[in-house]
Amino acid sequence: MTQFALARVPAIVFGAGRIASLGEDVTEVAGSGARVLVVADSGVSALGMTAQVAAAIQAGGHTAVVFDDIQSNPKESQVRTAIGLAQSKGATAVVCLGGGSAVDAGKLIAATARCDDDVTAFRLAARPLPASGLAKICIPTTAGTGSETTAVSVLSDDSGVKYWYWGSALKADRVVLDPELTVALPAHLTAATGVDALVHAIEACTNRNAFAANDLYGLEAIRLVGRHLATAVAEPGDLAARGGMLLAAAFAGIAIDNAGTALAHNIAHALGSLVPIHHGRAVAIAMAATLEWNVEGNAQGFAKVAEALGLGRDPKRLPAWFDRFVRSVGIKVSLADEAKGVDAAVLARRMASPENAAMRAANVRPVTDEDLEPLAGMVLSAG
Ligand SMILES: [Fe+2]
Image (cartoon, rainbow, N blue to C red; front, side, top):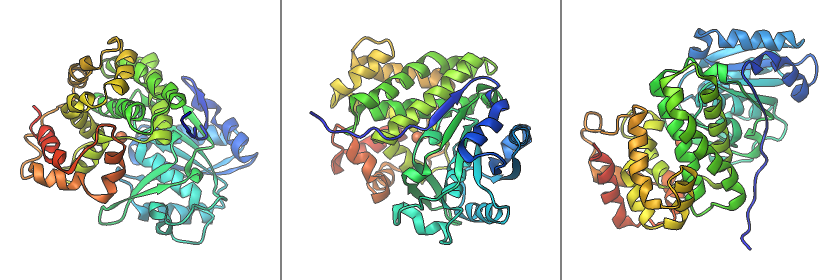
């Protein structure tokens, strides 16, 4: 019998307008009269959501201090500044509000705020994160990265080099999924983040670490994306579609928390280090270009994905479906305008680099050294 470990899933509360009860959520995770640091990105604040969240916290009898300087590709230096604020205000809880960047940063702020060591001491899990972090609630305003349900944060140093932080101390104590917070997300970001969630789920269900108990989350995430993403893109105010996508992203986050990703994420991370491209679009392009190759070496794994998408148990139908799907939600698949100067050999070298090795090794069809350049070529010549 196969051994597996299904990690802790944070408590998840869901509902349109659910944010209004946030004060009660804070009481449950941090007690009454909590001092809450709200970590948000500036875009979310501009839409009035940070003020809405702070008001809901205060309505529960707590105090709220806002730090809303988080940008995409969040920096360790911002985490350091926010920790200083948390310490000076005696914060006892952190509410992480925004896309993956704000949630990643907020989780790390909460985990290390009571610690005297600089945050960088915990890069790449060099040291275990302290067990005595602040209570944290994650409230995603995009439906994509799944950071709200994972034990990972990714932060950059000031020169842009990315570092992974990992540990159960980065898990949320509670996740609040409120579809009303995602209706303002523009169509191109709805599509790119939604496909990121889909690729998380597909890769978690089909890689070497996949197991049946985790497939419950991954396959349901795949069904939800298949059912809801096109509507969320075309009709941004459709709360059923927005809610379906929030659940999909959270479930896909659980799936990668247990099983990780594979080839498409290996390529997307390599590509993202060479070309300024949204991560969701990068995984969409990478999977569209290489899925036929990958299905050839793992028909059984991909059969269940095909089934979840209503394609029978025929994995051969999957590559054409995926390509059509990503184009139908408006993702531009060709890199011709953006990747000038990046040839297959350069991309292949990045795919082989140590920080991308685990994703490559997890792929069921072995990705040999000889495979790298042809695979990179497929991605760069997609059109
Ligand atoms: Fe991803």
